[in-house]
Length: 189
Image: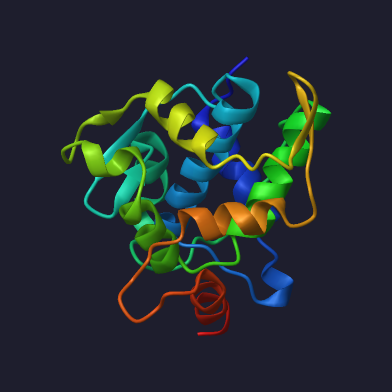
């Protein structure tokens, strides 16, 4: 069963560790929605949320979520008082948490650049819907053979699985030939 994108957005916002200095803008929220949706489609064959993802200038966007948080403009979203009553299946929750932990480390701009470097966003004009089957197919190409599958609904992850996925999806910019250097630069800078 697919959830509402706003419920998944709240789940992401509740994960933001404000006490330790973490923040999230609408731009970053949009990119994290794209990644949790994409990996969910690839792993479970179903959408995590039912709303479409649309190609916008700054990357993939879920319009209803954008509209809800657009009042913050470029500022960080105030997460105080946001609650999350959504309960995912254990395997879905594990995947959600893993994707959030790995991708939330990056700035909004870094995530935007990652979505601009490969994937369905490149194939569609601004304003066009990114078909879920193409998002699924793209994220399936990011799977690593060493990630074991115990059944259709339950995958066991290598410790470095998500790190390797990030390396595969990282752009190869002139002057930054090594994905490890690129990842370190994003985390430290």
